Image 1 (tube, rainbow, N blue to C red):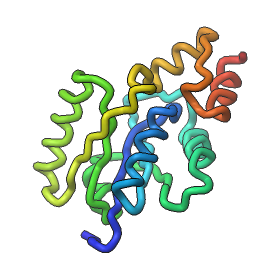
Image 2 (image 1 turned 90 degrees about the horizontal axis):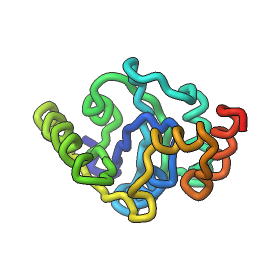
Image 3 (image 1 turned 180 degrees about the vertical axis):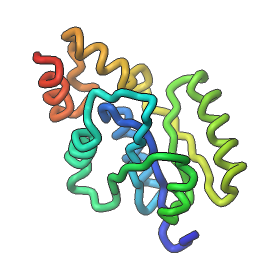
Length: 163
């Protein structure tokens, strides 16, 4: 592992990226030299936004920050982390139910690769109730999600749902 640069990977589907995700990425940059936002390709999920659209939405959020890299991955995230010479996986937690699932993943990743740590960050209180799924559902039915996602994501959601 490259000890010179502290690199973390923040995996997720980011369909779409929310202010909660942005909060986790921004706070991760206080601990790591670089954060790779790894958009996970999951055949079991049918995302609203294409992979290219999700990349574009995230790039717009961090265009001015050279310490944030956007990439895609499929397969075991721990293998991806090792391939990028990263030392940690960053995960955001909103509730106790998140912790139960995330702990299981972290323990499995630790078993598969002892050099990779998992770092849990509590979601900022302002964002504790939102998820990409909840955002999409609210937007689908015309709910006001302004302030929960960046303006360009709000516009993209409105375009998807014809609003």
